Figure (cartoon, rainbow, N blue to C red):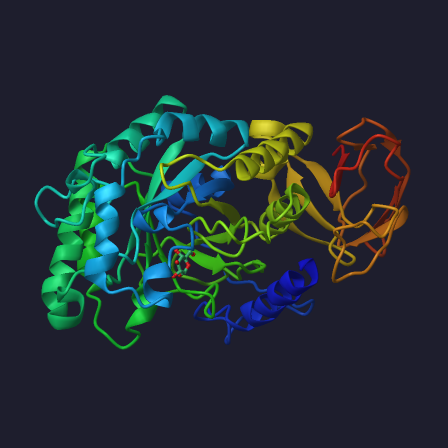
Amino acid sequence: MRVSRRTFLNGVAATSAAALTQKGEANAMTTNDGQDTRPIPTPAPRIAHFERMGYGMFIHWGLYSQMGRGEWAMNMHHIPAERYLELMKTFTAKDFSGRKIAKLAKKAGMKYITLTSRHHEGFSLYDTRGLSEHDVMHTPANRDLIQDFTEGCRAEGIMPMLYHTTLDWTEPRFEKDFPAYLQYLRDSVEILCTHYGKLGGLWFDGNWSKPNADWQEDKLYATIRKHQPEAMIINNTGIGEEGKLGNPEIDSVTFERGRPKPLNRHGHPKYVSAEMCHTMNFHWGIANNDFNYLSPAHVIEELCFARRAGANLLMNVGPTATGKIPEYEAAAFGRVGDWIRLHGGEKGVLYQGNPTQISGEGDDFALELNGDLYLFITDLTPTSNTMAHMSGHKGAGARKFAGVEKAYKEATWMDSGESLKMEFDGNAKQLTLHATNYPYGTNTVVRVARLKG
Ligand code: GLC
């Protein structure tokens, strides 16, 4: 099964480069050595802050979670709206605790959580204050779960963010009276922006359902800027259009299950960040018979490869019918958190490190932080039981990095402190690191060497 997933991911990655369509790339001004000389805009504080958060938890939870067949179950299995909405009668949310989830996220090294306040099914996890009957106040749960969530996050120092669908399968105005529907959408978002304290951002999804419609995005985003000027505005472009920029108010491009490539920000009017979202199996909402899980090793790789491009990773889990994070995902997230702690933890290179011009071979790459260089060495596992892919297996030995401008003092593995041999050729701007094998008893999937500046 893993092979098919790899193929799938690689297929997506192949389209993502072509889809990097930030305007202005075509007429780049370059020097002789191919460098784009146009200035890079300074990120707004909210965008700079978002980039430094680096890693977040995505949560898809709604009525569909009771069926355990993914968040698209209503649509994919052609369930009529009326029958589907019967699920409201049994929605108890009895195990949902924003605080518990935030604690888990914190332990896992995640700095923010993006929860579905409403997904395509049209059911809201918050009190819509009369806007819709399809909300949590009309279920046995009868409590505002977005309030529970935002308060729980803040108590643990986690930034709450909200996913909000723009398409709606159960609100008749979506098909019958689109302008009225858009007003309903804006009113719904306004409630979120005015009753739950400071939000890290709003993450929209669904404009791809009516690609030619006038979504009146300016009005929607103006509502957010008015009440939550510090909130990130994100709008998922969907799986086929990764990295594409939309409305100028958008603060971050998205990569749904892709491999982010660094954005060319030279000459752009605004600095935008990037975020890749991925899920622990093949569905976003819980799917009881989907066994095709990512391993912690795979998540570590996804996190590293996102950070290589300066992108955030938003890793999804679908809670159970009653709102609990399933055990496997909780444990897997925890293990990735352990890996992060071995590699600088909270304030370390995973969050604060900057992409550089330095390039490694295959999947190897470098990040820079406070004058030190961090070399991320992949495919070191000496057996065929490896998460190694595209680049093939490399094992221990010389790893070359090009574009290195200066000599570094000493190199050590972050996980063990072992010092490593290296050579630097100033003329060729090439650095060679002699990567040693994992000592018996360890395997960190991606191994990081720290080079003192
Ligand atoms: C897709 C799906 C949706 C999911 C989202 C996450 O757009 O429609 O179910 O919420 O991806 O990125």
